[in-house]
Length: 288
Image 1 (cartoon, rainbow, N blue to C red):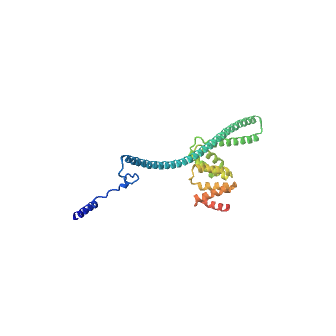
Image 2: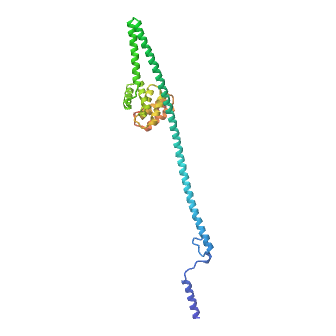
Image 3: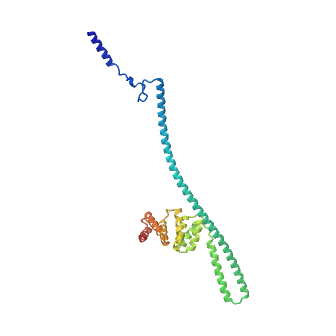
């Protein structure tokens, strides 16, 4: 009896001391986190399953990259569309400049023909004077006619000399143009500033002064056109407050109150402490 009891205790102690074995019920489970008890076929299936999962993760990552690239491409397309729009605007501006150049060239050719006709008339008048000098005896009347002819000839030659700016430095022409403008000799100043624009010298400032001349002569549509051209070339010049103010006033005098308000408001916002802004506030209050 003692031997049987001893055997039972030893057997129980051995089972208690033995390490815990995995349950046979989970063997071959491919869905387990740590599969065990797999056959060779099941091991091969497990390996393929793991490879498929890795491919799926890689595919998902690639899809995310593709989506990000698509978003970037969409952004680049928007930028390109904006650039294309600007390029088309620049092309139109270049076409307008070319049209203006052609117009100026045509006017120059017409002016040259007129000068030739005037020269012919002067020669004819000179011949007439010579004939009168030979045949007409009234010296007093002849002297008056000769004096009038010489006055006209001198004025014409002075006009030709004044209009011929070739060979003069642009800086000198610019200085003289500003002096003429200050003395309110607008016709002469306009000739000088136009020459500077054709020679690509200070085009923003020259267009501004041409706008000021048109503004003071009451040609408000021309003034607005010159102001816009000046601002498009350089919008950080010291005369910008005056340019914006006179543009607004020009629109107001043309009856376009909406545009006038917009330019008054822009002037006040951009240059709040300027003298032009002070005038703009008064004018804007009147329009409201």
